[in-house]
Length: 186
View 1 (cartoon, helix red, strand yellow):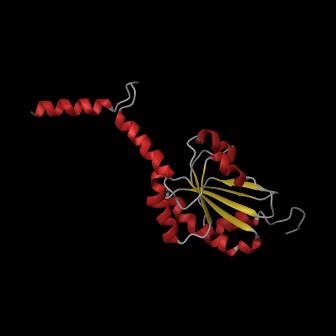
View 2 (view 1 turned 120 degrees about the vertical axis):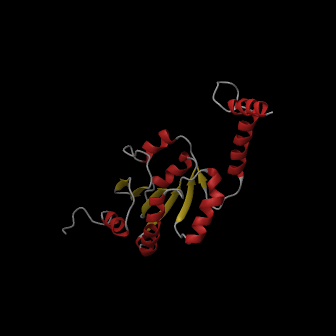
View 3 (view 1 turned 45 degrees about the horizontal axis):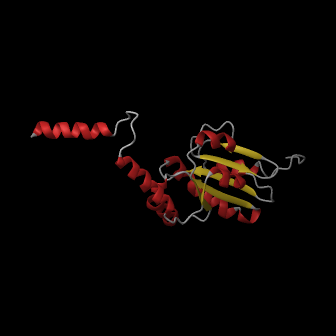
């Protein structure tokens, strides 16, 4: 009986290994589950990169802070209060914070929504759901290696990209560069 159980287990396990055969029915069901989860309504706009890209290139009177983050990224969560604080303090100075979440679809309802609610985030939150990272990462910044946290700060005159976490002081210092006039004397 034990041999039969072992043989059955080995056969079952080998069905999931990559052997260039058509995926088994369980794998197909997993894909369907992920697709149906995407269709489940979430509280935030979901973009592929083509849909997100206009948010990265606005030419109006605002300065944008675009932060790429995820709920599973500890440094991202550590810096989040600073984005919220700066966004609140600077809202009258045409500063807009957009938090671009990179969580997996199965995390949107279970982690992202509760995190935003529990922390009372006031910044705009959007989801980037585009598996073609090798295509869109260099479009955000050609030097970006893909690590998070990462932040793009831009306005119509200037653009800076940071592939690291911020303290409150560092974020304010980075923003200060966007308000200095080139011809002014310090």
